[in-house]
Image (tube, rainbow, N blue to C red):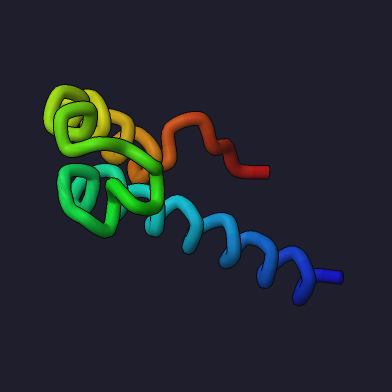
Length: 66
């Protein structure tokens, strides 16, 4: 049971890191625009908001230890 919990915790951690990278570094890039389905104008206009959200996703805010 502990192994399953550790594996699932790792999956959640990797997803947070993935969203951090996508939102902070690839938002205003062709890869990010394709993944999120945005035009260059929309991604340029919301890049600062996405970077803030990416930092939040990567920081672990809201997680608590058991």
